[in-house]
Length: 193
Image 1 (cartoon, rainbow, N blue to C red):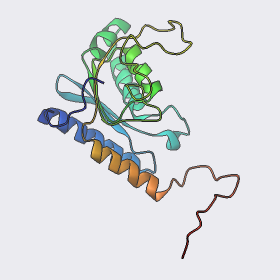
Image 2: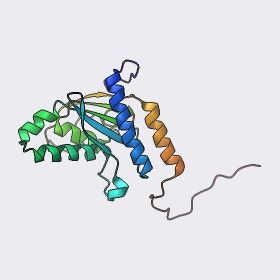
Image 3: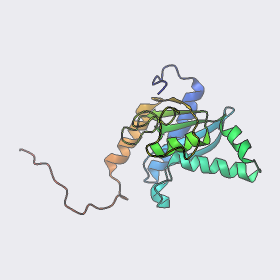
Image 4: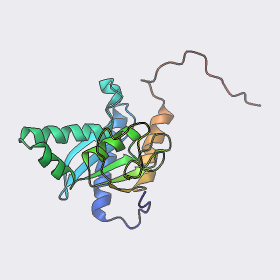
């Protein structure tokens, strides 16, 4: 990761992260894991997304994938060629509340996004330094060969991390009503009274 400093962030960076936080709040209100993002080109939000894995019953519908699909659909409608899409995405920045997972980081690298700003680290599935560093070309995907050409992107974490963690905590403390029911009884901690 290139940086984990919020103090030096521009007001623009914080404003875009605030919009990502709003997307995460929408996800929380929809009983989804609260992760949200926005994609920015030339100082303007051109796409946004939030987790929709439960709603769609599709485990790949992470916030980043949702925003990417919105963007690609917009660009397809105006008739951009593959090379024009590649050129445009290389000028875009993504602001997301949680470090992109390995799947999303790989997709962002293959697409060739310019940079990613994220809130909290993803210690279980992070693809931008926590588990793998897919934003760096020196990081190879395990057993992937060279299936797709990946491009480096700048990655900055720790922006509004406390807000992002707070949303995740709220989600997990309330319990996930959409989670599968355990097949065996939960072990309860004995309390000494």
